Image (tube, rainbow, N blue to C red; front, side, top):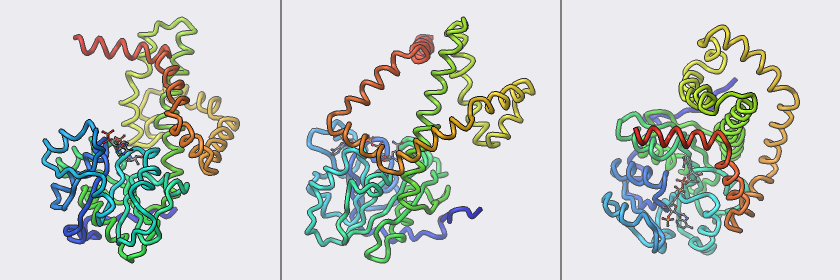
Length: 329
Ligand SMILES: NC(=O)c1ccc[n+]([C@@H]2O[C@H](COP(=O)([O-])OP(=O)(O)OC[C@H]3O[C@@H](n4cnc5c(N)ncnc54)[C@H](OP(=O)(O)O)[C@@H]3O)[C@@H](O)[C@H]2O)c1
């Protein structure tokens, strides 16, 4: 097995982007972390927001230059830190096809480029810089001096220096201390979507709810069910991170290990594997991207309906009760 190439500080030239005008679009989870980390690394960074954005005051109070959207298309480096489904219209409105500027467009997730929702001007460099965690942690890790690892990929390299720009930016957000993992837009997009849908978000939430429901149906009180499931997730997830899945099983009791390995064979059988393949296939073929963009265009009616149902789930109601009790105590 060959591991992807991993870059660290010695591979990056921090000076390369220092004289460039960098614009971060959006000041949400990633936008705030990118803007503050770039500023504190000595970069010439500004934030662009909509006229009526609720984040305007925060940007100013955090001593960052705030620009109108018109400034975006004049920047050397443009960082797309707005939600994925908003990016295609944003790109079409702000980057005319006749623009001949030597710009670097930076995406924090590969979806829009990989599936062609955005077809960038052929004169631009196009780079992916995807941190391995939420913006809050990206910022906290930078402040603590340890950095957060990220993926780096290049889709268009007109200048011949797209990788250099990407490495320089990655260092400026602090990723050079934790590792900059080379990838492609395709691999990041498919891996990210499949990983979150089937394990990190969908898998974890879905399995938690299904297990909880079965306990309730068998007479276990909701509070007990909560303490036997949600309450212990964090500890076991950090054991997997430290020791791997089999290592985690080795660290629990023989009772838990024996029962878990047996149940894994029952649950995660050929049929389950086929389902996973089906989901991966749908993502790869662009079907998920089409459904996502179609729902977004209508104001997310499907997302809202599914989220409402998830909020009415027994496990969620019990979790909310625990969280309220914690706040009141
Ligand atoms: N969140 C994560 O943990 C994470 C991790 C890795 C990669 N990423 C990627 O990072 C990118 C940004 O995600 P995010 O979660 O950081 O976004 P987010 O927090 O949802 O972004 C919110 C910001 O985007 C602005 N915005 C929304 N729609 C806009 C529009 N049409 N025009 C201009 N500004 C608009 C909002 O401004 P207003 O105040 O005007 O609404 C707000 O400042 C995505 O590509 C995502 O896939 C995210």
